[in-house]
Amino acid sequence: MKKLLLLIAAGLLYTANYACSCFEYEPNFYKNISSHNSYCFGVVKYKTAFEYNNLISTAAYVQIIDTIGLFPNKTGDMILVTGHDGLNCGEDIATFQNGDSIILGLQDGFYNAFASDTFYLDGCGANHLKTKDGECNKLGYEQIKQRYYSIKSKENQQQACFNMYVSTNFYENLSNKTYNCIAVFNGYNYSFSENGIVAQTGSFKLIDTIGSFDINNGENFTIIGENGLNCGQMLSEFAQNDTMFLTLSGKYDTGELLDTFYLLGGRTGQYYLNIKNGTNNGLTITEIKNKITMKILDIELAQINKEIKVYPNPTNKILMIESGEIKISSVEAYDINGKLLFDFGNINDTYAEFDISDIVQGIISLNIFTTRGMITKKVVKE
Image (cartoon, rainbow, N blue to C red; front, side):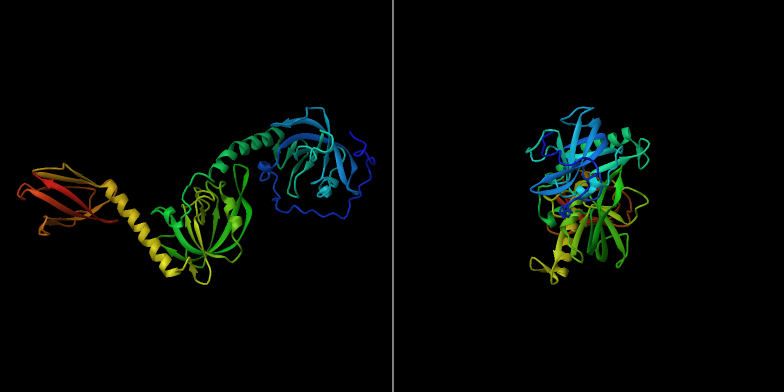
């Protein structure tokens, strides 16, 4: 180590009046994994003092027991760990005790200005786990390593959600399967975890709904990121008491979380509209609701039209209609001049057939009424 680093032996724990300025890091070790470069498991040998720009902070010598992922040093090496920027967050290190077994999330080198075996803690978030009797929060070291690799394997998925949805238009992201509502943002936290990974969670108060929604106006509900994890970071863009339209992809697939919904997609897909002074982009709340309703209706009818099959076409006798899982209520048939040819009601089934042998040749327009709306199909009578 350079002499600059070996200023005072263990016991000198003075830290300059240099408060942490890195509060953007969330206080959760696993949440911060994607921001760190190097992970290792080691034992704190002793603490020392670290001087930088005439300011002194606490640092610690740690002997590496094992490395996690890509780490530039080897098992058995001694490394020096400083606070963020060499100074800030040295108070975290001051809490270490000689002999502590500890898992560290570090950044490589101190701006490459000092020895290659010098690292620094990144931010005031939880960037270390102390282990006792081989465990931390009832997880053994091997389990913690597996959790690390699990999170790393999800990183590409989390990043992929930024590119998955090309549309940045709120209305283009609507569908008949989404939950659409007006809500007030209460705030967010990290109270939700899935497979040991802590996700950003937003709390909202429901003001009004568009279509079906399982909770009542005035009640609070929760929003998490896609699959509970991806894209939850979108919530940090919201300010407390923001009023907004939300398009949600449905409930989170966990029976216990009846009032929990999730955002689908990343920043490239826009799933909310902020409302200021009762408008967004010149549209009032009523106009926005009408636009959403009409958009969903158009989508619904397009899907019904795709699902309902009319065959054979052309035909000279029997005409059959299949509608998948959609129930057919009634069917009207008109000729090219608008004359009613037949009207069959009270079908209430997903299949119907008609004998049209007595109808003259030409184009027949069928109005098919279902429990989800009406569509029109055309067939040719030979």
